Image (cartoon, rainbow, N blue to C red; front, side):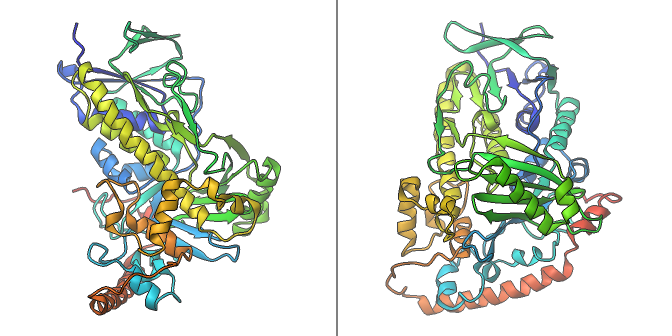
Length: 520
């Protein structure tokens, strides 16, 4: 009996399930030709996805192109807009000061580490505005491209804000109609295993048994296979990152001329933070908080007060909210035998820096690119996969924690976040290093780091981090300073050009209703 990997079964729809199906199915020929791969996705008719508005990383452009979706169609169908980074309000202190984490690295970053020159001569200006021209687009809600720019290209780097429910529906349509994915709408009633412990097939309440060689668990937080069958342990990270609840609301614009934000807005509160993303037809807002530090009722009042400040009292009073509970953490391993967990079945921390969808992209891409030819190869591939994703989860947690550790806010929630026992040893070590040497290219261990050194710089120096010790002056200090001054002057010129030539997000998205972006 052949043990070749030919049938992949995905349990669960939503963005995670259909994105995984699309990435894998787009990589291999359909089974209809006799030598391809069969991808089947089963989703329950009785379980609704969470469907909160989502933000993506720029990697989503590459993913959508890989699976063959038109960017124009995607933007139209998913009520999507352009995201160029995140702007943080009131995180460093309660004075309301802001900084950004743009998607573009500092200008000339390959050759120039801008930190030394910035700290020596430019600290009266914001770090992000000094080193990166993209930030100039945020204040005026400008787009990263023009209507004449080809699909998936841009004058600046960008991802998307999107309606998660509409995104899943678009992926489902594309996967079934264009990529040969079989959709099964049914409930799994039993999981049958082979004598060696591998999953053999699924029994359902509406169809014949579904046989598979590899099963991908996208069934959400309960993890039908990874947890329900295999009982793979869950690593609770609430001792490091405290948020475990969100109050979400879909907030209408005051009118159809309201600007669409160029970035996610993240506004610190006494026991968490509020997200605010701009879609063409509405804003997605929500308050992520710690139930150890604030009640649901207090959190809802906080969110409504924010909506009133940024909209109107009538809208704030009328929006419907819903509470979403989650446990911050992840599985001990993600690929066990012939089962891989993706999406919330693998874990979830919090939506800060929007890492949820990119983990699905990375996981499905690695499965597709390193798909074992035979069951005998699977344990070797799964070990590499588990090692890679354990590293990635640890790195995400360190990076998110950094935002809290650097704050000087005085509420108990923020003070608790700075307590040494809540800070991972790996992050403590990095902070000790950065006390005398700023991060740059030497920071990462892998070529595909989750967060490059530029991301750490934006957070560190945006939140006012300063070195506690000094290094001997570099032999080429004067030349480096002169180079930095020229580069920073060029940033100012580039920022002016971008502000002059880029349309507003709303203007470009309105134009896209009638005209298409160019295909390459």
